[in-house]
Image (cartoon, rainbow, N blue to C red; front, side, top):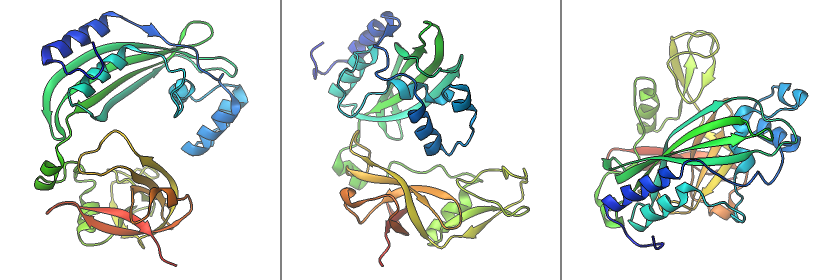
Length: 306
């Protein structure tokens, strides 16, 4: 296959069968061994205060992918059975991507000092299918990480939707494509947004505040829930600048932040009215409500004026 050459649907499925027939393809060992500094940073980022990992000289199981992830430069990246499939889908205009499934299984702890080795197996290509984001294909693959003893440490099934983003002219004519899921647990939040209120779920029994909302209190297990209206002010706790892939209805780059509210919870939202290069952790923000179409309003966060 020539890179960038469009293929028919039949040819895409033939390529998928070819990649699946390769079976499990091993990559190079992780560039760095399992080490305490990375574990410490990961635990801090996740808010995990469990001392057992470092005390026992092992890594949290959910860190399996961390050890073999490539840096921004991509240097030394191994070619996997997934790469040719993604190249072909991009060439056919399926440039949008959104993860739909991620399932992990853990066999044992990764130990300090060992280098994990990933092995990738392409599993399935389903489509083309019409979705809310556009017509696309669901691609599935599995990754297994092996330890120094050549035994599995962890496994992951990963599935993405590769879709054709709507044209800009189509985006203007159609409703905003990325609509939040509204159910009985979250309806109060979106009703508040329509009324210009930032509502935070509250347990009516023990008073615990929590976000995102859920069907019962994680502290006292009560289903007697209420809400409080937050001040609308916050501090930027963490953020990423999204450059690629394209996102329907959005112009890249844009900032997605985790905002810490003085009420004691954190909420995810876009940081607007500020160039990405000027966004900084700890900056003061205030909620702003932006209409995305005739029906949808989203809460976003703008720098708070002194």
